Image 1: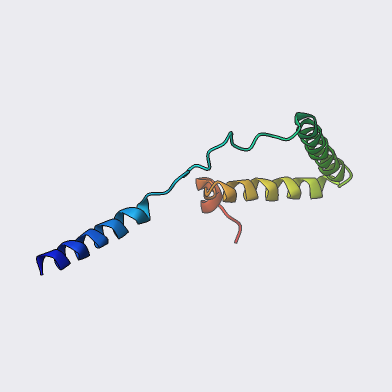
Image 2: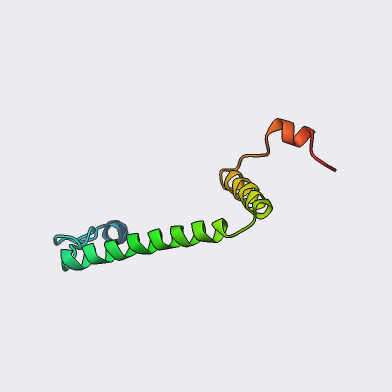
Length: 99
């Protein structure tokens, strides 16, 4: 009986240890290096130009609006930025809000 208990215990320990022992956990090798730095540079440049063009388009869109609309756009933009930062309205705006 002692031999069977010892064998069962040895098998249980072996199964528990083997589940946590992995070879090449991090993947080994040199990691993922960019295939060609030239293409990476071009991609980054295109993204930067696209962002710049988008910013200019937004600026032009705001410029062609009348003054009232620009003020409303600015107010809504500020409100959205505050909501993104999880901040509430300023104290005086809450108290003296038009109802």
